[in-house]
Image (cartoon, rainbow over all chains, first blue to last red):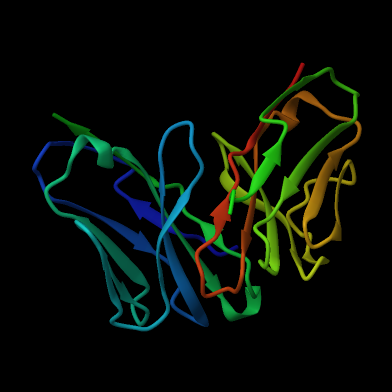
Length: 113
Length: 113
């Protein structure tokens, strides 16, 4: 069974703090790594899809990096705002799985104003 | 585009009844996925289709679950007979290729009593 591990499980920060989460995945036969943002009572929303070792993607105050050799990705949020409060999911797929994504359990972020 | 459309949003049914969940993917998306979200197991893939053909149904928990995609714009997930342990939020998602992020529907919250 292939596992995606995310840490920490949850995080409480103050508005303005910068924060980061980790996603660990099996590095063999890597295909793609996805990050999703999931607000309460809504559906997951795609943030990034990364495929190349060393990839770095950015959307506003949120950025992500990818290391496929060691099997991890970091998601960074600069200057957290209350509206950033959500569960952040990572998911990966490997070549043998085709387009099937395996999701991690997520990191719950709460930003206090 | 209205996004991925799921119906109903909520379903409450009695044990033993048949339940049918519906999904309309984004037009032009070749892949359609059915996921189930529970507290214990997070987001788990049940089945996915490519060009209306089921590719991997290894996540379907039992024979009580079946899914169809009769055309590119419609898919159903059926549970017959339903059991209380089937209570969960069922998400449908679609994507154009494996390189793109998935677009999720709003989910169907199923409660079997």
